[in-house]
Length: 225
Length: 351
Image (tube, rainbow over all chains, first blue to last red; front, side, top):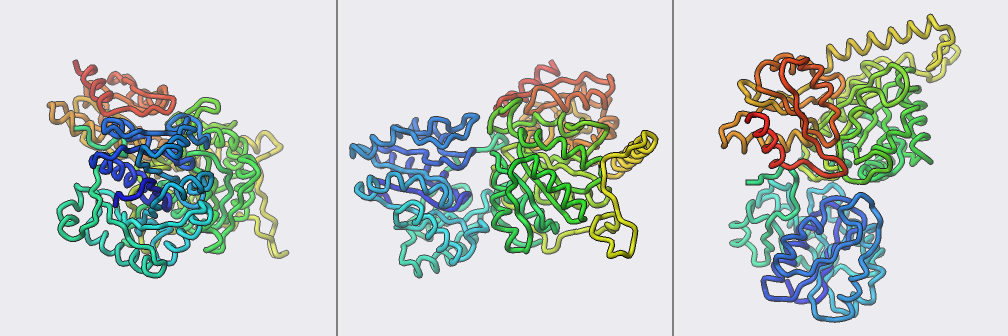
């Protein structure tokens, strides 16, 4: 799961890429890997990696955010600091990319650097999102992301959820659909990601490759106590 | 109930409109509501509808005027500065009694402001942002599920009264993901639109849609007709959520997403022995005056919490009418009120 130096997270917008990427980086850091995460989302204005900056930095993860993230302008400017991650190989890198082909276009700028660095490109799927609720729609979304990023998706992530209403059964039903797309495209499912509070115990018993997540992107009315 | 999906607020607004029978959408992109247009661009061709990205917000609202005149269900959407641009067309449509749905996913202002969430367009929406004596129904949902249900309902209200209905949410609501459960069948209330301009077929007198009446007596009579209609809407369509208000020490008033923040504060306050109630207006116009009258003598004081510098609080004061003190707490500039801030303010009030 944590083999490659550059780990790119793509997907349909709203698939949960950011939560997965943040948790992936946190767990990579826990394995004593020198980790960096880049908020590469220049499409989505709210609910982004930058929101989890405090916990990332507490865990010694170098966090690179676009200059205008979480401010009052939506300027699609890339952080120049990103280049340093490609020039030296000190860090293992997590790239949290914006949704759809629009968000993935940013990768095209770094296509050569990413290809040369040895990468895994994850495609995060939640089958409860209407634009990725059939194997065919998943394939179409992957094709459009590959075209605009000029990179190949190498792994799928089953992040099927209904937020707090998620059950293990929902995740398994999602898995069946994603397996169909996986077989047709010849792209393996790397892991299942789910919130520890919803499905933690079941997940650990059933699948070996599970990313148990904590909720790091929060809403103003989430519990404070 | 039908399938449960995980959707973004903006997507749900668009899908709800399609489900409500809206086949005409005219808009112009602006953060944080652009996903409505994005979704419509893909969805409208699937259902044989029309999506037009207009050349400006002004053009879009005038396209709404045209489509509504032809009697079809029509919607436009924007965010604060874009809604300002639409005001002339809104006033014209209100005078011409055109049914249409306008969505405002509010961002902070004034001026160009910014892309972050706010509730600073309350005055503009409920007091008439455009010129002249008109009103429009303003719905303020607080969850993605409510966005869906209220958008469908907005079309019914618009048709029933030949009125404009605004669905107003802040940027959080437009951008957030939440589970939504669509109904198998929507409640679409069909009404007779024999007033619409659809061609006479040489079989009847021509209908006229206008916002100009040349004789002052006639213009006044038209104004009186509009006011009578607004009275009727006040009687029939006022909606409010009243929560935990019996014997409350403090009643907090908040609309939209802030209502959800307050609900969590109520839980925390309860643990500290403070009883907090919530009056959440669901229709901002017509304002639920009756709920305030009912509870006017209950708490020590009222507290209005808003993402603005103090707007709805004026209507709360009018409704409470001096019977209890009315306090205010708000944040601006895209900042969000926190649960702790609200709790501190409540404690300060009851001290």
